[in-house]
Length: 81
Image (cartoon, rainbow, N blue to C red; front, side, top):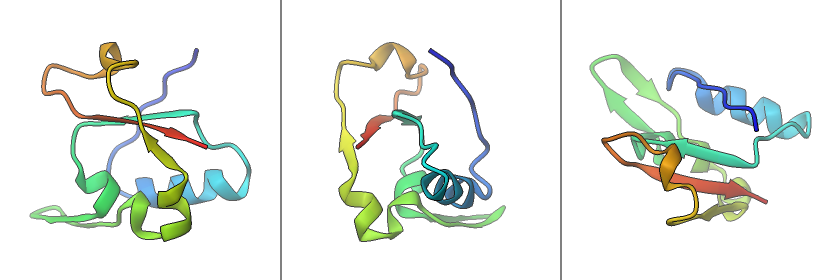
């Protein structure tokens, strides 16, 4: 298993590029739901990876199986199919 971390800034672009290259990770773990839906913060606007309904339909929420990947603040784990 390989674990790679990304900052929220431009993650949606990196993820979209990975989809076009067929290089999407099998498991996504994040601690801020803004990664999924998009969010505006004092740092600016962050696009969400779930903004495209086709992509969102390929994200399956995984509860319990990968909890050890979550930090103390908890978060969400999704599989990409």
